[in-house]
Image (tube, rainbow, N blue to C red; front, top):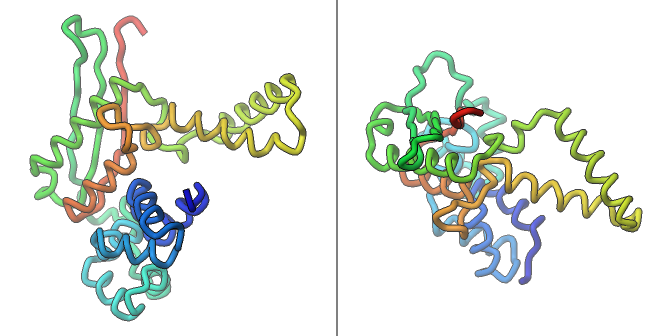
Length: 237
């Protein structure tokens, strides 16, 4: 492998592409970042990714991309500099669209998962592909029982508590002091992948995370989607 996890994160920040596509691009380019960016631009809709990242209108995304000479990062800068960015959820003048879906598990019906996924238009909210995606998220929540939607949703107090716990465990195991930071980082990655919905592997296809599945549907449907709320209700708990 000619690339690292940091390379994947960097490429994702540069392009707003999903993790799976970033890995594919880096494998194809043998770790060359410029070639990886070009690969992603050839495989996915650049304008949709700009729209998803900045919230700017499609026409403004196209204009920014033209003015930036098709440089994605420069286009993001132009959108922000010109005040065209309009992040999803900040515009109170527009009605939020989307659906709520529920899944009751098993013949004994002792567990139900409920999810809320939003979009920008009622056209997408009525789309069968969107409805199927939301149901998949309900199935994932029932199967994997995430505690949070994203790692950003974890309270800082919980992060601090886990850091202290991880460091104490490693010291008790006699791990070298200069290695603690790296090992703690790995423990956090594992915690996120188990407890945060977007970081979890899709239980139907472990080559994808829920975040990459979300990104795929954003590109297919052509507008921002967001998993807003999840709930698990288990009998007697």
